[in-house]
Length: 454
Image (cartoon, rainbow, N blue to C red):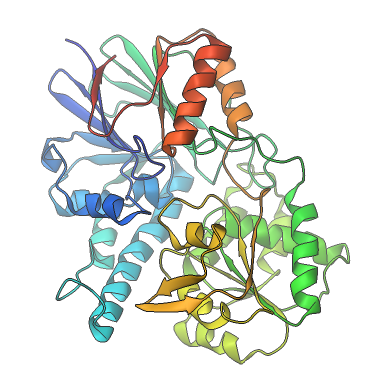
């Protein structure tokens, strides 16, 4: 009985990761992500999967970012009854991210209905906060490195991938085959996270390629961030920083704390962390010492680096603070959440600045800003972009092309095939080319919906 791998997301795009492994009438879904970015991709979230959710035996999540976990509440809502296997830190983050995702979708739908700019009447969320809370009951934790059985006779094991708290690569052994899923791999030189662990041997590898066509610059985030914030503070402007609530928000907080301690930024420069999700995620670092580079004192300093604004009223009150300030707010690609209100307020003033801190998927507002768009559409209005837009090249939490190849090269033996996924077409194809030419391994970029024998 052969083993088959179906690419239901994350193929040909950097979002919506879903990989279905089938063997002997059993099915395991590795990652369960939301599509983000271009509208035609987001519309896939509303398309039914080509398999009934109640025919899936188990779900295994490599980490908690929504492009890997955010479809889970909808899968459960539509009938999935099995267990969802995660690392302990991924469970803790999912408890924050998934309900928040449902809440934001409800808020955005309500806002669209109030202001009448949705093409759907009424606008409906994909799922609600209550749906997300319900899906959390199916989470089951397993420590990093410990073998477990997601289905009788199937063996699985998570190993550290860096990237964010709880992020893992996954080795799945079924039907005499070993399939290694990289998950999202972190950088070996990340400011917060430990480097990815050495990968085990496998017959097939499913490898991410977010930065498969480029290498990160030598400069670190401290050296790049300091002059940028000095510049906006000197002209009395506001820096709006769209951050990923898990990972980049904490890296920026840690960097700002370090820069203030070193005297490179004024200690009195007001900094706000305006994202309940990012606030809760920041607090988790102290609960997972040993899983990242920070000690207890550094975690404490990170928590004191900003004013935490938890409520909508506290968020709105930031606008009353005159003079220079820094606002860290989710989401990192400006696809939703509180950051949209800050962008709408501050984008049109040339004294202000928008700082992009990570990968910006095509079709997102963040990508539009990175591409020097003259206007940005927010809540049905076109806002002129007069603020300075800066994209930090050192802030990414993903391994670059060289680091991805180094990770693959560290495998004890060559796999039969590498499937290059979770990247824009150019990035994925460039990494495929380098794998074939530098490692001399067979590699391909699978198409969305395709099925391959392992």
